[in-house]
Amino acid sequence: MQQTAPSTPMTTAGHTRAILTLGLPLIGGHLGQIAIGATDTIMVGWYSVEGLAAITLAQMMFFVLFIFGSGFAIAVMPLVASFVAKEDEVGIRRSTRMGLWLSLAFGAVVYPMFFWSEPLLHLMGQGETISPQAAGYLRIAGLGMVPALVVMVLRSYLAALERTQVIFWITILSAVGNALANYAFIFGNWGAPELGLNGAALASLVTQMIALGATLAYVIWVMPHHQLFVRFWRSDSAMLALVFRLGAPIGLTLLCESGLFAAAALMMGWLGTIPLAAHGIAVQLASITFMVHLGFSNVATIRVGNAYGRRDIPHMARGAIVVTVLSIVFSLLTMLVFVIWPEPLISLFMRDGETARAQIMAIGVGLLAMAALFQLVDGAQAVALGMLRGVQDTKVPMIYAAISYWVIGIPCSYALGFLLGWDGIGIWAGLVIGLGAASVLLNMRFWGTTIKGLAASMR
Image 1 (tube, rainbow, N blue to C red):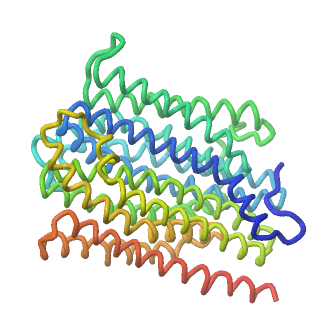
Image 2 (cartoon, helix red, strand yellow; image 1 turned 90 degrees about the horizontal axis):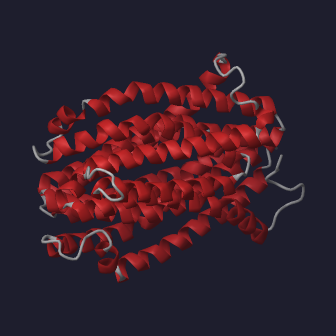
């Protein structure tokens, strides 16, 4: 089994090499995952602007519930990383298996919300034209929730074991399968029926099943010694409770953040179909760059969790500094890209003859400028969350997230967008403010409380 940390102190250059070696495949995997959503958005955008607006709403609803349920999967990562440091293979199996249990249960419970989503969308103020289309998408794509969560648990397990290359290649396989399925089912190519938005939903479901099959095959054939699925039905109440105690706050934290973006999507929908379509494009572009920070966040969880399992606080602090700096550097680069080249980026999501192209472009350029502003704070809060999860600190970060995103961010978006009349720019300015508050609070928690507290306990 691979070990994360050496027996001697690691230099800054050593930390950088280790973080990039572990993190680049994770980042690639996350980019491949977001490419699946981006492919859906691009191809549906080529099909129709109404479809683009509908898929923005549908993906928002799917993502909010998925990200909530993925808290149990993410909780597996620091637990397995800590058990790896202790060379406890039984603990690795127990934590991963109970993460799978909780994820399966969550996926089964939430599917009815997808099946009867149209009334929910109407209650949220969405139009009579868009809501039925979004609901049709969700009835099909919602079936992919269970396989998506199972894959998420197994990816956390493999990442904590530092088997990140396989995560990358499986994601690439899924992304290619998704693009081919979209091309067939949205437009009716290769003898397939032309299903439009529902074709994108079917393609997403096919993609989830490809990822599930490939990941299960790898785990069963390459990692048989962990026996994850041997007597899988046997309960483990103590570990189930531990994964739940860690995972539920993680899920709620992610729900608070995704809820901020979901509220922004709903508010953009109040402005009309064209602003919502522009918002969908800007969110996809911002999500692509965020995947890099998410990869750094995962690395932070693994390496901090491994150091926490060994109680090596100096190693933990040095590694945390390096991963934070790498995230900041990438933020600065993406800020430049969004400000200098907004038009070519937005053009990727529309066909040349789109009648609403000029309007979407005008709105989208402004939204990308705001997205550039929150790159720095979004990356900083993501990495801080990863570090705190590494030391299994999830409850206080959940409270900070709720305050930052719901008490500060959403009211600011509404006030700036509607009360002050800034429209989409104001809504996105609220995102910046909420993410900025989270970044400050979470970094203060890790550097001002966690590191100092752990160092004092070791004296």
